[in-house]
Length: 174
Image (tube, rainbow, N blue to C red; front, side):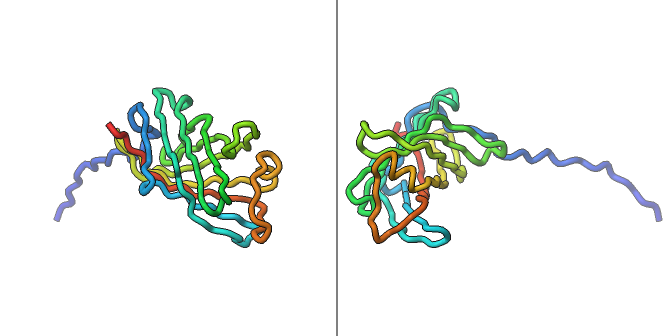
């Protein structure tokens, strides 16, 4: 009996999904394709969890990732008639390529009131040339948000931080 040796063919390397956005353009997420949930916490306890209405969810992709803008305008009963908006200042792909770090500001509907810095971290679930499906969270300390913007929750719902959970499918209408 003789042993025969065959040359081993190496498999191509498996790189993570490259950090890319859809092609440049303006993308929107319809109301039924954008889910935003507000959770307030006091220590380890959840004191409020409500779904918000995304009145406007837009992603403007520029040729440079630093010029790309994500904006969300949120309303709902949990906000007590107020409006919260998140506007990004940049979109930064993380090292693994499957996540996007989006620093921005969280503000109320009143443009005369200063905003609070917030960072939205999104996991890219699916991407194509004309769509982007993302899921992520942003956490903001409630104290600075209340002092800076005047945004106040109900007294029966104490909180030390807010968390926004965002799931959205951005598509290009054209």
